[in-house]
Amino acid sequence: LFRSKQWYQRRVAITAGGRMTDGLFNVIVKREPKLINPCQNHKGGTVVFSVHEPSSTIITKINWFRIVDDVPHALTNSKKYAITDRHRQLTVNGVTKHDIGMYQAVLTTHEGETKDEYFAIRQEDVEPPMRIIEATEYWTVTLSFQYSLVPGDKIRSISWKHLSKGGTTIETSKGKYKKYSITKDRKSLTITKLKPKLDSGCYIAIVDLGDYTLRALFKINIKPIPPIKAKVHESKVKWGQNVIFSFEAPKTVEISKIEWSYRKGSHVKPVLADGKKIILKKKEKSTDCDSALIPLL
Image (tube, rainbow, N blue to C red; front, side, top):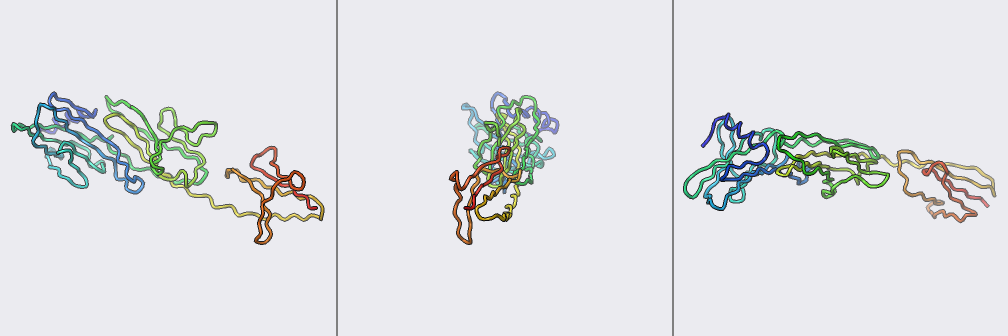
């Protein structure tokens, strides 16, 4: 029933591609990401092993084991292991480097025969720790990762998602100004002009290999820029002269709208251009500059 250490090592090499067929049972190793509140409760990914029975064979019992130092240890339902689908499926939660190794399913038929199938958790199946990036508002950051494949692996797709925004899929932005840019090999994501409410939180890169996925998790913490305290400019003019108020916005601040207002005590009213008494205009060489010409009549 249980084999030598060298036999197990050979089976690891055979199952490394994620699929093994022996003519009677077809065993599929499927690894899927576990994405439940990853920013708060990330404890590694999830590996799922499934046994599929042919219609001509009746299985009456399935027992699961983990092989440690050539010794099989029986597995039961717990926070770490979940045995479901009438014992046909074993789920290993929170996979870390300590879970690397061989797993075994012992199947008993209605005729009393037993058959054992073997599965492997490899080093590349262990999800890397979340990378945390500390940034400041309006910065540009780049998230990138590397991965290794084994013979037989074929990449189906690589996707980026913003998990803190409901798992929104990210693609390269259209137009001249690109909020998001993904490299051609899709291993890097660049985010420009960071904003705390929009860009903070968790991001994930998912490499889909069909039978299983590779993942890289990132978390961006964005420190907001404190509001700029308004400066008071005093202009001394004689009655009837014109007065010009002007300002230039800092280069680190993105201007979306400029409004002028008149304040006297607690009374505030908007300043609207009429082309005669009040003229509002932008400087020709900079769109971030603005001025108001107000004749004092």
